[in-house]
Image (tube, rainbow, N blue to C red; front, side, top):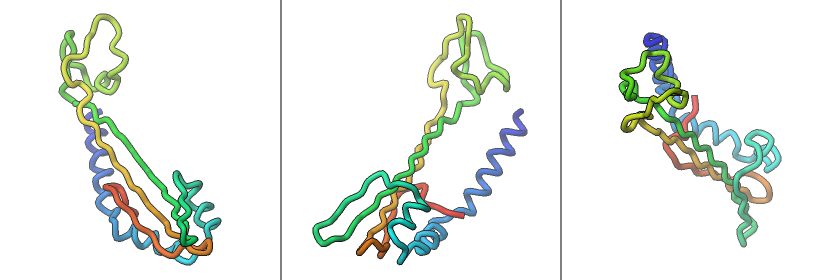
Length: 135
């Protein structure tokens, strides 16, 4: 089990190293000149739309991903858990009580992307966040 976890983490690290914000910019550039409908077909309904006084529109897409990484060293009052039990923090059963910060670390990744449209055509974009990357 430990080896599989290490391999999964290594694979994720390798793949995420290939994903860059420069590649995300290239992806966004493909939408320049496309219609609003083409953008919505590709990205889905935006989380927010804003109509500006000058007739320009802003379509905003937000992606938030929260992950909880369990601490491999957390304890219960019954002692240290084995590898199979470590990933079942909510199924203690019996009189086991979590001790301390047993869940480990919470990681939040997000990306906010705005597309600016004039006459229902994408004219520019901007993004911010720690997860605005593409392969």
